[in-house]
Length: 612
Image (cartoon, helix red, strand yellow):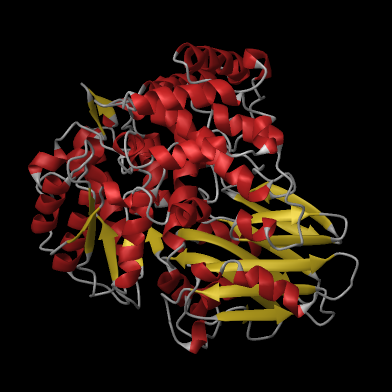
């Protein structure tokens, strides 16, 4: 994983070295192990790269990288986990290699297959390849948008980078706020990341499963991946379905243990992360493969003493099963204000909570020189998890909306109205203009996909949550929070083979009799602690926000609300917001429901104060 950036001056004037150096410097945290720049012959195009060395950490893997014949140049953020298999295939076709990196495999794959190489990759990536002969630039993101890529196009230049804040602070892009997006984020914080728009009016997002060409100053974007078109046949009997899931999941974990540096996992004690670490242990016992990291026994557990979402006992049980001695990081009241401005800045967007816990756990990995973490992201949206005890009404609204709009896309406006009415009745709606000011929904990736006619509400809802709403937002958060410390996150549950297979399964393989992730739980029988495998309670990996807002965050929140931020006042009715926050704090009655609805307003005001 790395940070990538590029500038193309469309009028032919040269890119100043200071411009690419500044853009590259703004993503320095993503790559603490090296940096590089490259200019084309006319110097109107420049690439910048910050390196997080994981595969071939020698100079042979340095970027920007040029193909052996000098024609193509690449900057790339990500990992292609099946690079060894692809390398052997390319060598059989006559390709030769100078390094042991997966970056060079991508260059050879491009020269052999062009765009078709994307469908051959098993991994996560954002990449840019320049052709010095045709003066064309190609960019692409992985199947599901795990790795980020933002860009801006003006009459003068095309600029891209791994993070929106890098573009906004580069001096190359107008950092004006997109008011419509800001309002939409406050109504539905999960309704933006799957779109092409961002909080900044000029910054666009290349959506997951999309690629783009820059030719003759014109941008052409197309979708190269559509999950519903790749659904495989599945076994008819349940035993066969479970066996196939187990095979795919174990191979997905094994592939993601390929690393030339130490790896580990963030362990919560829930089913997903416990399944990952137990599968890592099983892979070692079955026999490690080439380039697999033997330094994998690192588990990092965030604990919240006295908080409602502490899962330390379960995490201890999972670690013991995998024969791993975990590192525990206690997060308490004194951490509520610790590095709060940096954490909000690193998260670089608006969310439903302060992500201190994730930020701190990845910082601990960096302190202990563990560069890679295999985590359980994607399983909830792939197989269902948000209908468990402790669920807030916000999640119920979101699930109901996804179920309805997946069947009737034009119903989104009505769903928005119902959502706003319910939020207002709860006293948590503060947008200026009342219900008449509800912002229009944004087009989201995959929301118009034609799904199999036999799919029911659950499969349709999960498809949308996975591709369009909930998961893209979570992926954004964990990319930024991990890469703030130069940590690479790998996600076995998001292996495209496992995703397409699980999507094709009947709903009874995902949820039945109040149990979610049915096929995965059955597949992991005797491979992980039984108490965790069968547990029904779903606890999200979040900071203990109700406890913090009822206590140590009270002063910070009051001070923030007292600040004059004209851009915020234009979209939010601040008087009732301030009154509601004051009442909740005075009564110490913050709960997960009020946090999920009100924190985005606080987060938004902080961001607008930063940029507007």
